[in-house]
Amino acid sequence: MTLQDYQMEHVLVVPTLLFHELGHFQGFTSNVAPYLTTLLDPSYTSYRKRADVEDDPSFKQLIPYCIFRHQGKVFHYKRGKLQGDGRLRSKRSVGIGGHISSEDQNGESNVYREAMWREIGEEVFLEAEYTESCVGMINDDDTEVGRVHLGIVHIFELEEPKVRAREASIIETGFAEPSELAESYDQFETWSQICLDYLTSQ
Image: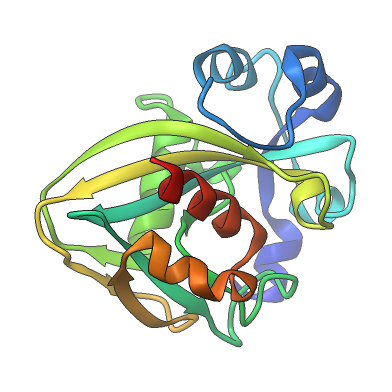
């Protein structure tokens, strides 16, 4: 994404106060349904300029965060120098995903899933059959990035370990056991650390 695109993009947000009313949590929760029913209700969502909300904790930007897993091993990668959000650059990650954009509104389909699939298609080649489920949500108010985002975690159980980077900013990819990745815990972005805690506890 160019700087001009970033400045012009409008992303889906919900008031942070609404999230608190539904039940504030820090870290990971598997109790997804009560949140998503309300947070994805168009009567509560709005699209605002990304440049304005990236530093405004009164809003939470909803982010699909997709984990690809094959026989217990998860896809992981490092965010390269071209990665869009400088606050995450050079960090390792187990999640693929991004913002829900006003351009994802298509009338015929669910805007959330439209955005999720657009982000997957932009970032990787997913070349295996899979089953997909929404397993939890992430909130991290302890970091600058986390304060303005709310993650919705999906796990894709793959029939084969076939995921390849499409974006140049996704480097050093592979599949590994969560416990093995946890040995390099400090190298991962906070959301991935939270997911690794969840995955290693299963």
